[in-house]
Image (cartoon, rainbow, N blue to C red):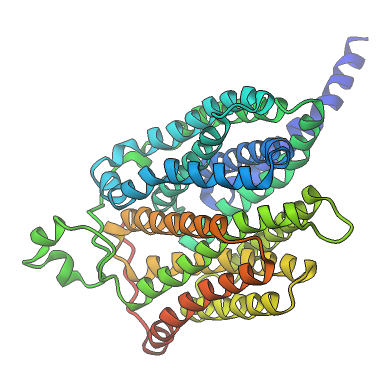
Length: 448
């Protein structure tokens, strides 16, 4: 009898334990377990799952229950109030991480804990509709973006032997996307129980993420082998007689033509992403796709963008670091063409197509930028370089979101602005990237 009970218990536990072992085996493969990259992949999966729980709760309740004009006004107001300090602090986030490298795990844990507490606050606000809902929701957004900045600085410290940054970042990103795909239907199920429940789920997930952040290896907080990121490609500029003077004015400076133009192109795609999220969220609410509700219309676009992002990450991992300049120029040109097409032939299909292509391009272009930074930026400043570049990209996202909120809800006008954003990025960076691809670059040796 006891043996039968044990067999039944084992059979019931196996789907959970077996799945957990399978996930651990996948995330820790090829040396990722020994280097600590596996733990970061798991942490990023927790981050994605928690964020999607919050998204489900807000999209299913508050967003569609407030009149559009009122919602736009409140979101715009609190975007300005909440993001203004972040925008002002953005230029010093990189230098701050330079001076306080020992706080990276604490910073990631802090971002997780902040979202856990804000999720609890939101669980009450979504029921009462109180005014604190909007700053709390955007506070979750800021904490999520802050986590992304620190994560970008952490990845180079956890590379297994013979692992490129492109491969590592693609694994981390795929882990987050898979977790998002699993958590979304769970969040929808919790939403059926009541608007509070997805936020309770987010609270539990983010608390787990808080503790998981401190499970990362101590070398994440180590500054050994690092220096302040001037993001300068030539050793003479980094170590020459002007070094002390230039250290007083850190910033995105002369990293070389490939990295600066690659960063500019990525900034245009990130700006497009922020723009599409906010603009389409309100546009589809007022003018949903034919035969669909506003929630379903927005869900279709989000699914298209997520699918494109996953495909872009997979393709980037397959291409590795081959011709990153050409990849960036190509994907931005493709997005520009699709954006122009969507503006001219505005409709449900082309809007979903633009979301998918933009997601694909953003993922692939970011991995190509990672390859350029690994190739052209000396390793002693590479960790800081990632933090600074990610900060700039986050601010581009904020700028795009602000433009998306401010525009009238006219599809043709909005997608014309989207095309203009991408065209500006492509026109100002394509020539420099192509020139870099023709002349090549001297890779920087990895220092161990």
